[in-house]
Length: 434
Image (cartoon, rainbow, N blue to C red):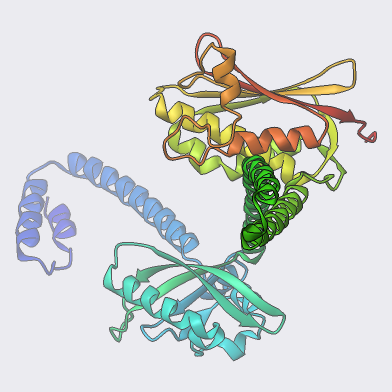
């Protein structure tokens, strides 16, 4: 017993008094056991110690493997496909990766410590200042802005997304900024805006032509009647006597002015007449898809589902005029669904090619619908004949004139069981084989 007691009490003292007291208690209980029992317990304890040591070595190895060396961290940071930089409150780039340097078109060493605002266009510095103010003022939120930078290869548009990182040991707060080159996207958006402006300009010119044509038509008849009345008055004055010379002179002057006005009306009518379109081959499905992309926000807002079906069909015509027609008809469908408060709006655009060289395009919706009376349907295409109080009433007349100028026709009919169908035809052109 004495031998085993000495062996058990040869343990070093523990720094924690409570643990030492518990250990002494356990050792005293162990001394009370027989030598064989002590030996068995010590064997079990040794086995547990070996197991604990093995687990400890495994945990240490796992922790060692989890630690990425700083060199490896720097390599990963440098090779990220997105530009990253650490900015201070003033906008100086404390750290940045190689991708950021490539985006900004300068050497990495040249950019470290440099103010990001010095690389931006002059009118963009205010955007950066507000960006940093929002980042450091709202640490929990990511802040996104777009700025234009100057690079040796030309202007570059950047999307900056910044979040606040934990302060360094010296207490200086910084933000991590991701830089993404969106120049190609911005150029595409600018081209789309230019195209939309061209569409708007074409629509305005066509509307102006329609209004001028209507004005010329409405003025020509009263001017002709007035000219006739003045001529008759001049004949009557000749029978009265010489004292009416002054009256006849005034009538002649009036007739000359009327003739001048009539000639002006004729010139306006000739100008307003729809000229031969600049013809080129266009795929109707492509034109329709482009128009749907223009109207995507309006379609999404009204919750309509759009379906385009039909084969690839090409026509000869003016791209902007054909897009203007499709834009007007699809927008009418969107307005019809919105005014009808339709829960599940539907717009279906179908292309059907007929054997006699004509393609039929139909824009159908399930909105408020159209009247059954053919006279009321024809009235939709009259200038200022829109049933919408906020509309100018020239979209459908212009569309019919444009389709007629392309050798087709446009008409409207009720949809079944609800809604409207606007249908137009155009001559088919042959697409080249792929």
